[in-house]
Amino acid sequence: MQHQAAVAYQATAKTVETPRDREAALLIKSAATMQNLRDNWPADFEVLRTGLTFNRKLWTIFMSSVTREDNPLSAPVRQNIANLGMFILNETREILLDPVAPNRLDPLININRQLAAGLRGN
Image (cartoon, rainbow, N blue to C red; front, top):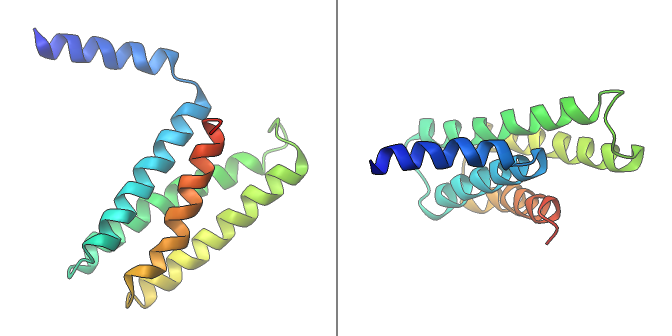
């Protein structure tokens, strides 16, 4: 019975969730994953790679969306998001090439959190 209620709630949540809410939730999820990586710096490189790959895929989708002609955001906002995306992709590559310091994740975590807060209107 409890499982059925959870499934029903999830189905309803998906129908009332706006795209902005979904984007914010994904950014928060990725920030939380990277914060956990930072707090518990992994000895296993694969764990780090998996967490950073999720964030990279998320930002690749954002960048693809903002560069489309039919995107309703203003040109300056689209350019700012694209610039952030390029920064994130470059930083991710650098961290994966030389994973020496957990604090290198801080900018990625902060950008995701700040953008999520903006999407949620905070």
